[in-house]
Length: 281
Image (cartoon, rainbow, N blue to C red; front, side, top):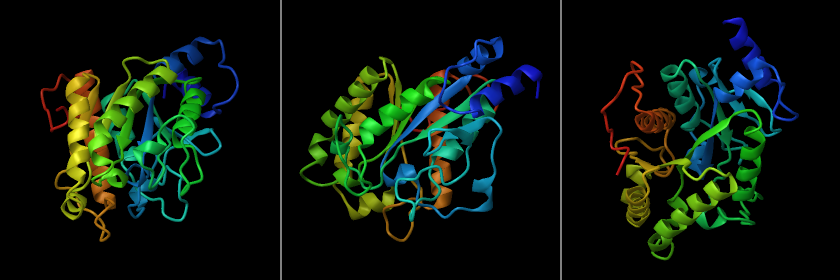
């Protein structure tokens, strides 16, 4: 690693609190430290079984831990329900992005709350299962992270809790409101927002999930900075709700393809890409 890169990396992992150094290395490190908020419910938090590959760190993929300190990213990233957390899409996403852009360090901000409906993702919203305020906590952690890096986007996977006749028809408006609030509170009017769809097995069990997918597609069609990522053909665990570990990793790579498509970078070669992968609707 070049000396300047090493200085930048050490500045990033030194901690999220305190002012940035005024050195050239610190300035360059902040500009190349790309932050992504991981939000939603349990399939973003991850419930897949952790394997050795999930414990292998990438030197340019970091995560903001529960103490708001930057540490090398390894699964599980989340801590919403410690007894259940496992492999989610976040780490695979971060690694894919880091491999595609060798000049960037990827910072993941885990904020998903298992079981949370989208109605909990608003200012002062409370989620009893995790005894948390998902939206307020996410904004607070993003602001802490943004002292060290630049917020590039939001990865969202949520909707299982809203897959019912009462909440499903309201999903598009609630999602649009959430995106508007995040952009406003994080002072990023064009912030990229990438939303994933529920698993095939869950859709088969809960047909109302189609209402959530329709809501995501409606918002994506109306907003050029909102993308949809399909979870088609990704397998669930036996509960027919949560992605297994392999599926979660693949979902993360699909999120990365959507982000790279927006940046017009190929995940394989770093060149312009015309591949769609059902990420934009």
